[in-house]
Amino acid sequence: QVQLVESGGGSVQSGGSLRLSCAAFGYTYNYYCMGWFRQAPGKEREGVATIYAGGGSTYDADAVKGRFTIAQDNARSSVFLQKNSLKPEDAAVYYCAAEATPSCAGGGGGRSDFTYWGQGTQVTVSS
Image (cartoon, rainbow, N blue to C red; front, top):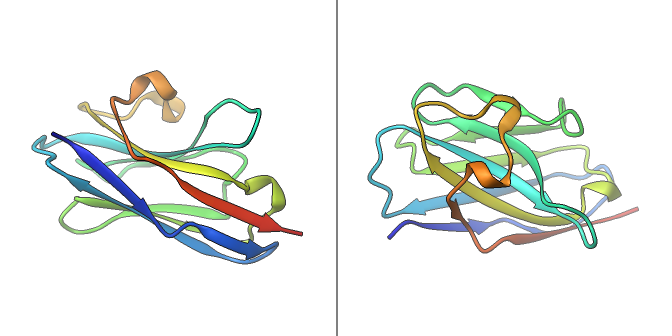
């Protein structure tokens, strides 16, 4: 049973930083893609960033390029999202996702490209 557990959400002022963490439990695959998605009230869930655990290649959505960085730990059992220069439009529930695959989908993929999801962590950005 694969379980993804996010942490690190919270409230921050515009321009501030937060670091989200996602720990994967029960994951027995050797090669997989992990990603972060976000969903604001009334909006579709959108991809933020992905990282391929087998090779470390990453993808960042245009909206967060240069401000957010996705990384993984050496054991490849956790993935992190460092978020700098936060804006009010970054406020959302952030979800960690994982999929057993030989490579991440082009352009980060969509919601249907991932099988495993965390419960989400709320990020609030005040102006």
